Length: 252
Image (cartoon, rainbow, N blue to C red; front, side, top):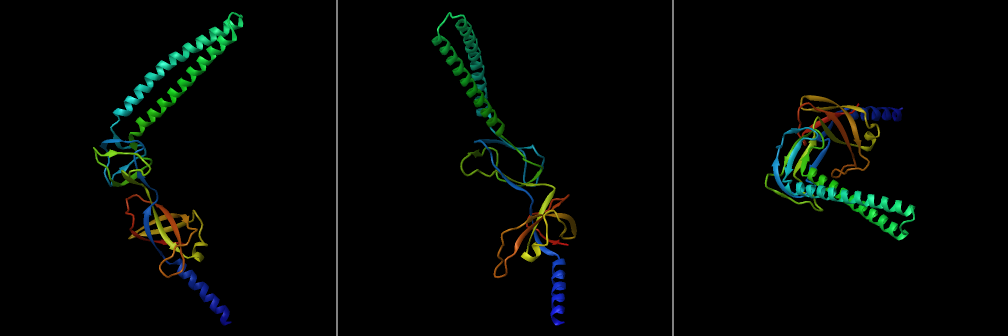
């Protein structure tokens, strides 16, 4: 009798503990460090820390004069090589016709085909170079990858930006409209949860409806206590909250 009573009390006690609000800390649901894909001098910066930006909105622009010149040169080369390719094609067709009439030798036909293949290859290379230079020109304007809030701005007009192995962070963006509440649960608690499960997040006097997004697989040690696992709950917001703010999550 005492054995069953003890088991019942343990079950009730664990459910009470589980029903309690679990401490959490707010984090950005999506955070990205923005760098420039190409090198150059910053010509203008269009946003400040705290600004909300839409997907595709211009964040900053590099001086694009060099890239504009590269595109112009590539376009000129394309025009010239297109004419040379057209001439080589006409010559090949003419020689082929003469060959069919047995007027010229196989050697002359092979030479015409070779000139045509060379002109075709050079035109393809020029087209690829033009596309690459157009991309460089487009990359000189840095745009927001999604609707976001500017968390930090680390760039000013006149600054020289150099691409390399370690990208230079110019801005930090966080996805707007939602936050992530991160808490830590025991293995027994986390086994009762599922990704997509509805939960409630409380921040001060505000309450939000959220969903479980992350159930950690690797344990995290907290001092000398037993291992616990990270759990992330994403929830929508209408007013901007700050990362690092304390919150509580109620898991049903």
